[in-house]
Image (tube, one colour):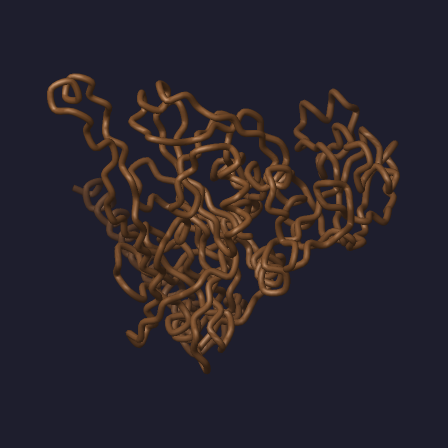
Length: 485
């Protein structure tokens, strides 16, 4: 009994000690927790802030959206097309000569951006390409018929004009200053849903190989994840200040609808294209006269290049701007006008801002040393002459950059065509710039039939403004191309 009582006493004493220690520790811990979470104490850090972010930390796009909505228009196009019917010799045997062409009306839609109060509107070339009639609908539902001031297939930019004054318009931003991660808005008319605004961020810059480079050799797109769908083409990409930084042009998609990747022509390219069209009626395109390639780690090791920056000069055009300035094969071009260029697309973007005759500073690395040279840019024919309105295009086959040959009736009948001439050779010139390939059979120019090779020259000598060339390739694919005279 004595042993049992002593054990019970020890057990009770231990319990009291444990309870007391637990109460003491819990009280201290509770006080410590209360001190850390005290709401009236000031934390030792701040949330980062930027223009367009509210005090609550949420992006506010209302100001930018309001500016943009009234300056973005809906574009509707109408064009007459001819469908060549298949040649049926049995039907002709029994029923006589059959009609081989059937006309129909094709309609399209897109978006545009008003850039001046007197009615100049920027859009994509592919939105209005080949259109017979272009109708503009403003945000307030007023409608106008637009005329084409100029088109440029190389950058997919077109300039329209409506007759009106005191229109709302967007100010140009600076696409060179745009940073990856920056908030942007895409404004347009997807699926004919007028005045639609979507938000996203800049995902990347200087994207190329998005569209067929043979048709549009100048590609340096701004990539964004703002939702863009069919109908948004030609619409505005704006920053949080409501400034125009790009023209929405294309999406990367497996099904034709938005999948997270959209691309816009940078506004700094658009500004120069528009300025040329207003002043000259055509684009004054300058070239450095170099063949270049991007630099990766494997190529850098092969050529003993120490830094993975810039673009590598593979070769020089004889008599070109770069050769005249002393640039050599094997040089690495790192900057144009103090703007760093790290890819082919970025170099093209910077050069596209200038005209033949302009002098630019070009930084190159040669033998591990950087030097800067002055380059006087030239046109494609190695001259610095600007094309004037009076001679925008010399309306001859020489200026077109192609040779033509007549096509026998048997070949035409095989494709259900009644007339046409074939392009036998293609060189640098107007036709190659818009993407026409060798072998293309021209059936019509501005709705006028082309029967002989002389018809090409004769028709162009009578035409002014937009020229639409229609025809087909011998694989059966029909196509139309347009450019300005």
